[in-house]
Amino acid sequence: MIRQPDFVTEDLFQQTIEHVRMKKKHLPVQLAKYERLSDGLFTDEMHHGSYDDEPATFSIMEKYCEENGLIRIDKRHKEIYISDVRKTVAEK
Image (cartoon, rainbow, N blue to C red; front, side, top):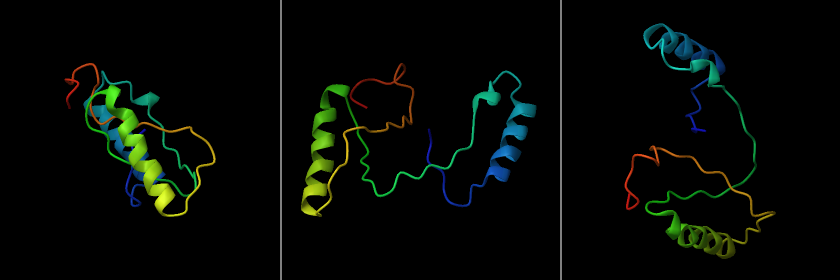
């Protein structure tokens, strides 16, 4: 899942998929999909480093919610990876 700017529409997404399909025939572009999600109000935080350090990142978000009168309705979360975890050293 990769968050896109507002100007990215489903039409633009389809055009891009076709462009990639023609230039990069080996890529499985048929697996990509365009979705609009509406999760309501949320917090997000860029986590850098090892998975072992994730609790500190969650604590930052919890503190923000407490300071701003926000209440989490559950503990589910989404993770968006911007690098390949199999190829990136843990410190990054």
